[in-house]
Length: 78
Image (cartoon, rainbow, N blue to C red):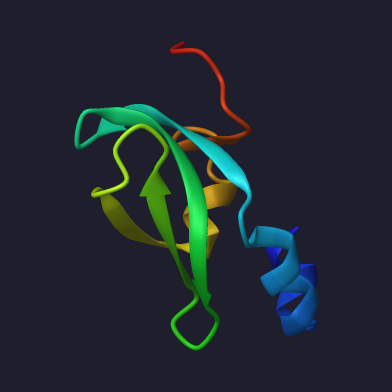
């Protein structure tokens, strides 16, 4: 999915901006995150914790495709 979207930066930005994700492992104590910013030049997204707005993380866009790290939507702990 990410490879197809690399060819269309505007689509990539629209696809990820404000999308919701759940981390398989807790990050800074939380699992539910929302994409705040998309940095196409760096192939990264900045995510903010839904439960604690002071927590922000930057990850590679490719990591969102790794189901061992992230799942789309807000899911319960596995």
